[in-house]
Image (cartoon, rainbow, N blue to C red; front, side, top):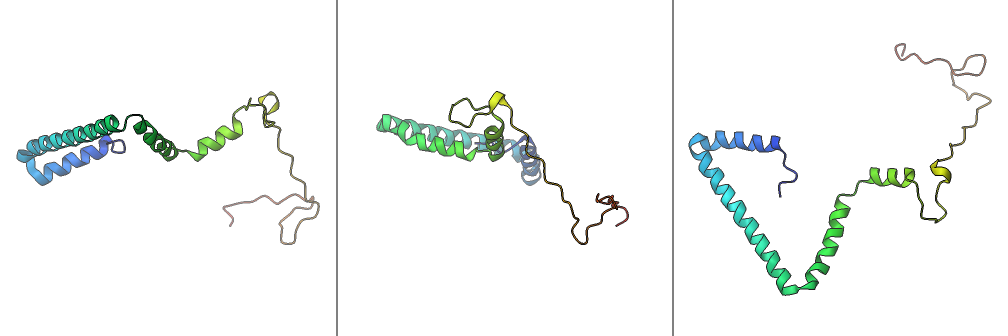
Length: 134
């Protein structure tokens, strides 16, 4: 329930509650909040157990798509691409890399004539760039 709330946020809420309610009413308000959160959890657990007992095996089939959606919610595209590109594939589908190494990319072709407006030296190399001079 409080997966996305960290200790810093809880501390800010407590300090704000201290200023709003005052030190006299803060303990009773915290106790009231704790009781109500516990009741809500008990209601949710009771409802889930009642659904499970009434639906039987169909309840697990109903929860399967929800679990799949939860996995999609935690999908990290960077990790998936990294795994796809750098993990050694041993499935035999023709995409496995020999010896687990990726061949180096081909070297870029060299330009023979510089394009107009290109700052080059007499040997065809680019002139050094000085960021302080610009």
